[in-house]
Amino acid sequence: MSGIFGVVSKGNCAETLFYGTDYHSHLGTEYGGIAVLGEDFTRQIHNLNQSQFKSKFYDDYKCINGNKGIGVISDYDEQPIYLNSRFGPFCTVTSGFAENAEELATKLLKKGISFSEVSKRAVNTPELIAKLINQGDDLIDGIKKMFDVIDGSCSLLLLHKDGIYAARDRLGYTPLIVGKRADAWAVTAETSAFPNNGFEVAKHVEPGEIILINEDGIVQRRPGGGNINQICAFLWIYTGFPASNYEGINVETVRERCGRCLAKRDRDIEVDLVSGVPDSGCAHGLGYAMESGKPFRRPLVKYTPGYGRSYTPPSQQTRDLIAKMKLIPIKEVIEGNSIVVCEDSIVRGTQLRNFTIKKLWDCGAKKIHIRPACPPLMFPCRFNLSTRSIHELAARKAIRSLEGYDLQDVSEYIDANSEKYKKMVEWIAKDLDVSTLRYQTVDDMVKAIGRPKEKLCLYCWTGECPKSARPKAAIDIMEVKKPSVERAAETKVAL
Image 1 (cartoon, helix red, strand yellow):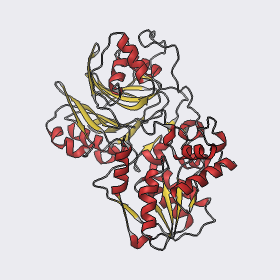
Image 2: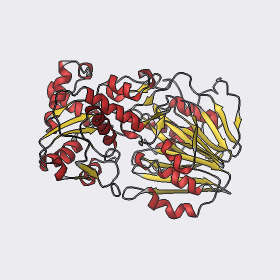
Image 3: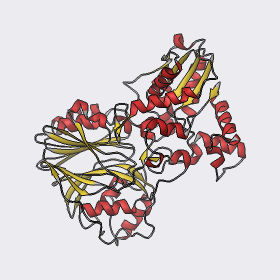
Image 4: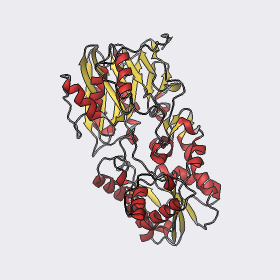
């Protein structure tokens, strides 16, 4: 999931854009990019593999002048994309994933439309999104048609002479929030980008909604999708920044409630201390400590200046290196103690086993109790570039070992009350080499988030696809008729 940020101000927006985009650095590790519109477009893209956004763009932003701009911390593709379209030139940044990107690219190629951006995959998805938008009758119609044909999700910011068009994906999987200060409007994926930049939350963009932000304020160009809003639950569990709010619900407090739920089900173990795997596991651990009355301590500390998240990089080799180097054990805290270790999730399990649990045993831990804040992950995400193969998942490896083959129907293993679920958890615990392992239940996780179950995407745990997740099967992107959906009245809000 990439992080995107945009701003329109009365004066030069470059400094606000620089810092606002930087506050999304936890969402991507591959590329950073900004685009500013003044007298003309200025665009910069840098590789962030071995560096941070701030260091790469610090000199760039000081030389940029314009009153509107967009930025991105990308999880895979190079962006922003610049397109000199029939609607005038524009730049766009995207967050999301299109499962049918290759199919859509092939259709465009057959229509004589070419692609120029280099990608590790066969197509640069943000460029594909830009080319799809260009097939519409206007920018709004193009974004609507793009929503209709992609299989997955895409939220975007589009920088144009009109202003910044902000569009949230039609399922509401990824968030977009509008902020206001005296001299500017901003739109962000993470509200944590607002406080230190002086913005107050003004609006949560609805699923499928398209708004325009310009010097006159904000204008709704297309209404949202009614009752459909199935935001990714993993935002609260792991992906999001602790200071961020989605749909008005704060990340840190959700994680604390997750930890409390874990502790309430854990009356049968004796422990000396509670901990969390830095960074996202810490709040889960704090909640556990508050509920259990056991002290929260830090047997593992993260060397924050040099290492980011080990879950987001695309290669296993890079993930392993970061996991190995970023966590430093404190033997004086670990030795002789029975420790509850709260973790946001167990995805592949390799890093937890090889670079977290091993360090605790090597430093003399008496017992290690692992408590993930979410249920076992059963399915690769359909809306985000995280796990792409079902075979990577720790739960699927356990099922494959227990059954002797890849089971198609895993419903019994999803049911936390079944014997098969218990055997799967026992297998994972043995594989991880821990004293005990107990996962969060789906119901407790939903309760901790505080949002109705039908208003969350729980696909990676349950396999239940959000309503209307797949596009209309017969759509041809070059032949979709202009939709008859009425446009909302253009209500302006002054800057």
